[in-house]
Length: 530
Image 1 (cartoon, helix red, strand yellow):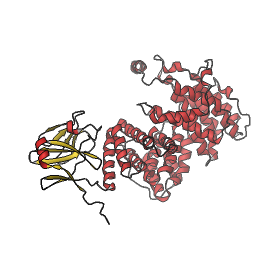
Image 2 (cartoon, one colour; image 1 turned 90 degrees about the horizontal axis):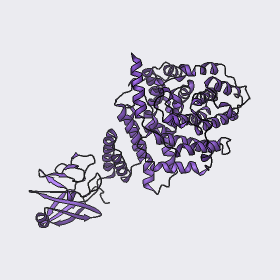
Image 3 (cartoon, helix red, strand yellow; image 1 turned 180 degrees about the horizontal axis):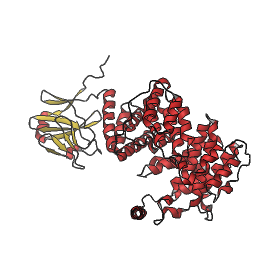
C-alpha cells in the first residue's frame, strides 16, 4: 500500500541554472513554484502570493530571506515560513541537491493538516473581519474535503462570547442563507460557498463592533428546572438562566429548553418582534448544524431574552397587557384589513380581539394589513432631518410585522395558547406603523409583481452588493418569510399586496446614513439635557 504521507520528490532544475539566475519559476505537477538562491541557501515556495495571486517572482528579496510582494507589500520570511505582513500563509517546499540537481518534495500535506491550517487562518480572518480572507480560507477548507457547515459551527462558537446582547441578525439570517444554499445547484461551487461566507462575515462584523468579550457564566445548575428557568428569564436574571440552560442542554439538549424559550419569546411585545424571530431561526439553524452549534445558539438566545427591551412597558403600548389579560377565543368578527388604516395601537388591539375566534381569518387579515402598510410606507420619513428620534422610521420597521407573524405562526403550532400574544403583538405593529404611511400615494406601479418575484429576489441575494449586513439580512428574511407563508397558503388573500410591497421594497432606494439627522437630533438632545 502506498504511504499517502511519503515524499514526492521531483526534479526542478539544475543547480547551476539557479545560481546563474538567482531565481526561477518552474511548473511541476500543476504547481507554479518560485526558487530563490540567496547566499548559500535555497528557498522554494508558491509563486502566487496567497493574498490575490500576484507573482512573487516579481517581488523584492531583502535581508536575505524576506520576500515582499510588490503589489500590496505582503511580506514572507522564507526561512521559517512566517507571514510577516498580511494574513494567509505561503506554502514552502522542502528541497534536496542530488548530483548538481535541485529536487523538490511536492507531496501535499494530509487533508486533516490542510483543514486545520485553513481553520486557523479562518479564525484570524474572523477576528479581523477580513471578508476576502474568510472566503479564501473557507475555499481552502472545502478543497481539503472539509464541510463548510462545520466551519460555520466553529464560527458560531467563536462569536458566542463576543455578543453583548446575545443573538443578532447574523444568526437570524443564517438559516435563510442555508435555505437558499440548499436550493442552489451543488455543481456550482461558488454559489454554494457564498451563503456560508456571508454568514461568517456577518458574525465577524457583529463581534468586532461590540468589542467584547462578554463571557457567559460557567456555572451549571445541579438539575434543569423549567419553572425556575422561565422565571429567571422573566426576572432578567441572566446568570441563573444560563446556569439552568447549561443543565438543560446536558440533560435533554436544545429541545428540552424550547417550550420555555417559546413562551419567553412571545410573553411580551418586546425587542420590536425580534425575540420570536430569533427563537425560530435559532432552532432552524440548530436543525441544520446539530450538536456542534447547540450551545453557541442557545446561550446567546437566552441572553437576548433576558436583556431584551420590553416595549409593552412603555406608554405607546400600555394597552397590550390589558388586552392580553382580557383575551378569549370567542370573537368571530374578523376585521377587514382596511379597518387598520390610520388606527393607533388601542384601536388596532380592539379590532384584533374582535376576530379572536377565527384564527386563520384573523391571521390572513393581519398579514394583509401588514403588507398593505408596508406598500404605503411614507418615504418622506426616510429623508427627514428635523423630526424627533421616535420618528426615525424606515423600511426595515415595516418588514418586522411580516417576519414576526411568520416566526410566531410556526411557534404557535406547538403552543396554541400563544396565538393571543401573536395576534395582539401584530396589532401593536400595525398601530405603531399607522402613523408612518401615506394611504393617498399611487402604488399602482408596484402591483404588477408576479409569483416569480420572490425567487428573483432570492437569486439576487447571491451578489447583493450591499456592504452593510443589516440590509440584505432583512431583505432575505422578509423574502424567505413570504415564500414560506405562500408555500403553506398559496392562495392567501394577502398575496397580491404582499408581492407589491416586496416589489416596492427591493426597488426603491434606502437611505442608509443620516448625517444631518443624526447631528441635528444629537444637538437637540444635548440642549435638553440642561
